Length: 108
Image (cartoon, rainbow, N blue to C red; front, side, top):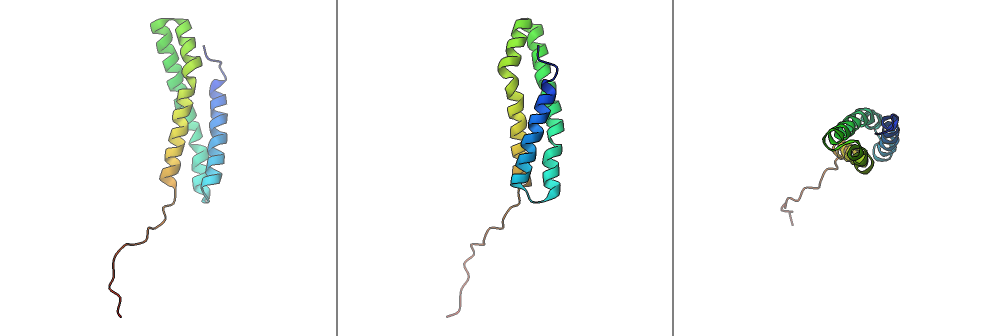
């Protein structure tokens, strides 16, 4: 089965990535803080999904299959968490006003 500290490792990794992403992408302090805070629920949710998947596979196909699943597909939950961070970052990004393309008659 998975090592007991893998949840802490994923939390630390996500916290580092979200902190870097937040400081590189945003100027507003609350957006940076939000990016750091979101690491905790994403790490917890990702580990719940990973452990549930390992248990289901191990119960259905045996302990070797559960171990194989954890070793080969454990990164998928981390990749989904990173995708969620990127989506949140996209949603929080400041939009620049687009210039209007209206045609106006100019006096001669």
